Image (cartoon, rainbow, N blue to C red; front, side, top):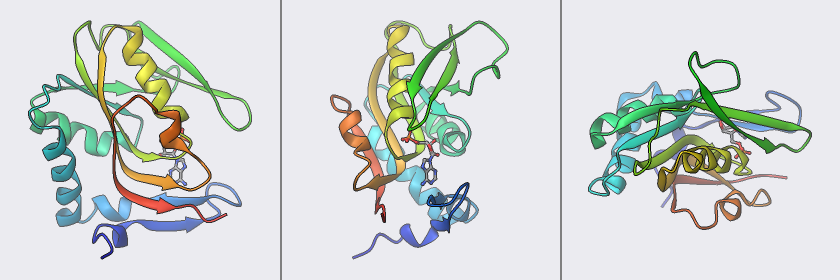
Length: 177
Ligand code: AMP
């Protein structure tokens, strides 16, 4: 049976550029019941695992991240695009199909011994999430899990890039070539 949450994901073809099938989560989070259901599933999965920080990736990761942190009794950490955070930051640069990108976090956001759940809305190639895990590890935090609402399956192999980490995705959507 198809997951009832799937019908709340809107596919926007050719956005932000031709050839991309953009998975729009605004149609999920604007509806209370499915949004609550998606939060609850993630919270229940990580309850009792001793998570001390939820580190979410700008910007759609924040939609769930704060809710998950609150219910797990954990702190919330912002991972952002370069130049957005006001205090001293550390950063990790990662490869894109063409060029590179970076994400940053405040240097003091995570400390040695923190048990961290990394969260983003969607797993595609896995580059962003892997960089986020490296940021956590740079300051000696432990990545307990990496969670997503959507995992794009098929030729992107995002899960392979996260080998060695405990990966949870609520919805698997095959990419159409
Ligand atoms: P990646 O680093 O390739 O795993 O890309 C993941 C990041 O890009 C996430 O923050 C997603 O929000 C965004 N993203 C990549 N591909 C898509 C897509 N097809 N639809 C929606 N968001 C996407």
